[in-house]
Figure (cartoon, rainbow over the protein chains, first blue to last red):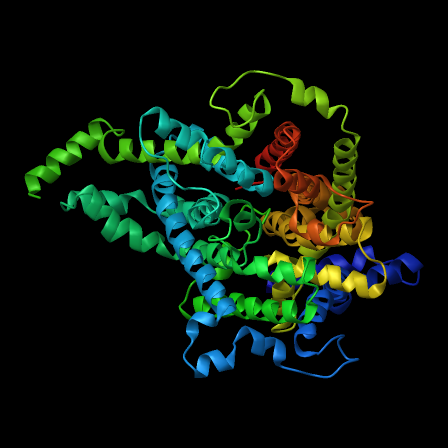
Amino acid sequence: MSSQDDVAADAVRQRPTHEKGTFRGRLLELADSEVFKGSITLGPVLVLLTVFYAIPVVLLLTYSVFIEDPFSSGLTFDHFGRFIDMSAVTSFQFGELSYVRLLGRSLGIAVIVTVLSLVISYPITYYLGQYAPERWKIVLVMLVIIPFWTSYLIRTYAWIPILSTNGFINGTLTALGLPTLPLLNNMVGSIIGLVYVFVPFTVLPLYASMEGLDPSLIEASRDLGASRWEAFREVVFPLTLPGALAGGVFVFIKTAAAYVTPSLLGGTSGRMYAQVIETQFGSAFNWNFGAALSVILVVVVLGTIWIAMRWGINVKGSRGLGGGGL
Amino acid sequence: MSVADGIRDRIGSSSDPNDGAGGGLKLAALLTYLFLYGPILVVVVMSFDAGRYGLRWEFTTEWYASLATRSDLIGSLWLSVQIGIVVMIVSTVLAVIAAFGLSRFDWPKRKGPIATYLIFVPLTLPLIIYGIGLFVFFTRLGIGRGFLPIVVGHVLYALPFATLVVGAGVIDLDRSLEEAAMDLGADPLTTFREVTLPALMPNIVAAALFSFTLSFDEFLISFFVSGSGAVPLPVRIWGMVRADIEPEVYAISVVVLAISIAVAALATKLRRF
């Protein structure tokens, strides 16, 4: 942001605007100091973030190391002990580590959902970035972004009449004389719903990469005899992968913490980790254990981002691109 | 593949750009749009269905008619609109201030990035953790659940997005306009009011609209901090879906989708790519 020109320009313009001695003049002079400008612009926001974001989250997490109420009861690591049952570990009864298994399954689902999102994102972004007619492009991109900003709750439960036993897909299969498929209230339901709500996280950064890709590179490879597939594999794919991975990291961390989609579409066999956290606060009233489970989820999420950044994935580059709602 | 094949391929593709891979990609893109909009279409179709889940679909508008009699749903819709408007105003004002703070001033080394990270942490941590954290926080304060915790949660949730949208405008802003105004004798406040704000207006309006839809559609935070007195529409819809006995759920969902798609479309159009 800073440049010598700016400094020079500041020096030139400051003189005529400050009427020395008047209240307004002194106010404007004060307003010119960098510290003042910084604290008055970011100050209120940082105070709000601290009071209404950091303190609530940290307060929740501190419950994990106390027997009951934070700071008025003793410290304990029992809540984490309940997550990793050491007696089961030492006796090699890994099947009894139900919370660890649930976390493992959630992360497994997150990997599947991330891969599927990337697979779905490549063709449409390749089309939008390289083939779409110029005058339709903005409308076509908008059409991808808009669902991202509309109720994910409604868009998720919309899958119930599509996937259920007598829903649209199975109704069609029955009409064709084919056997019905179990698509709802299991892991398949969770995965379909999660890909659906999170796919824009990979589409948007990948589109940015595809847009920025110089078409002459593809042409050059084709001129040198590469088939379309070879051109994609050797030129397009490596050049756009960074954008795709940045979005993939977001799909992974969002899926690992998913609550709404598995609750509506996953049933018992598609149950995911965040649902157990909610249970501790909603019906089990075990805040301390719920907080311990939350700490583990936060560690997983931050750890994923840390590893991704170590691998050179530009996580920040894709942050919040285009959307929200999740 | 031989060179001759390559040349033939080239000639073929340049004479008709939409054949081969182009056509295949077009089909894939079409299927992706079907995937994105199919479920939304299903909600609309179901909202006009007389019998539910039946194989035979019969047209009816009775669910829309019965919406008018559901004072609980109308109350929740109105509450969600009110919360959305308050959140929109607060988070947009904060976003304008924060966007300038982040992109305009020379920060001492490292403090700039730290401030940036702090504002964007809410985008990375799981929303469910924040929702529960707010619930615990307001319970401990003795405030409990209701309007205020929902508004606070939604403002903090919408703020990073709004800041990004306004920030993009601040970075793109042509500073020579402001410098010209100052050279012509305008003081910083006048310059901001007469030059900077109008130039940023599309981004500010887009940020406001995005903040509104984010709040209007937000479920998870509301789920943890809304109480019996103040139930926003998404939480009400969640209850209807879980209970699975109220066919009006599709009709009210169409109303919600219509509002949020209209607002999101307008915001996306205003926001510069």
